[in-house]
Image (tube, rainbow, N blue to C red; front, side):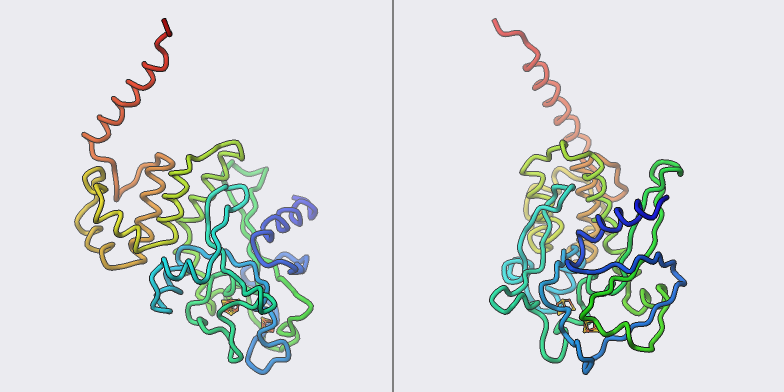
Length: 295
Ligand code: SF4
Ligand code: SF4
């Protein structure tokens, strides 16, 4: 793989990250080292928390809205803008910067990040970026992952003597936990992107995707207070968990979307047999009607 190819792929990956970031053109592995320290009192403190391009993952939303004691409806309305994510054409929520305050993040304060313990994954990874490349010479579907540093001129943290490896930085930032929580959502985005730009998704399906991936209260209501459970078989243990636990509900949501939107098999949810039979009959009838020659 050529450096140009890697740079292009990294550039593409960064379009989903922070604008204005400068990639140090050095490929880092998990044990590669770099110097960095960020702390109150550093001359650039809080400068990076302005005009940041932050896509919130479903797990980010659950953590932040629960920390703030808000419903998802309130959180989305106050702090986010809905948007369609590039090639996936799927709806996501972006953290809304305060335009009237020179693009300040709504959570930055003179003392630092007000939601530090639950800050979004994008803020946790900084200054490390992650890129995933599909190797052309390997079997289809095999991915190669590597890391790079995003150096911004205003960031003085790189001049500090504290040394990290990519691994120790990731551990400090709980990156593994966040990665595992976001995996189901990323898989859905990748599945959709792999269909290509021409593959349109009905508006109803997109609305369903947005509700399930951003709004746990509404999704819970949809599961327990609509005919949902008349159509889908879900075991009692799962139902007990998702009734109270937002994270379990979020993960259940990924499985549900995988099943209903992409037709994938799931171990924890499936369309009931009688509903499936009825649906198949309806489709066959519709197709026959379409094929009937007009007289
Ligand atoms: S969420 Fe916190 S760390 Fe991230 S940009 Fe806002 S203030 Fe900064
Ligand atoms: S610019 Fe860099 S060192 Fe300064 S506060 Fe932001 S991350 Fe920390």
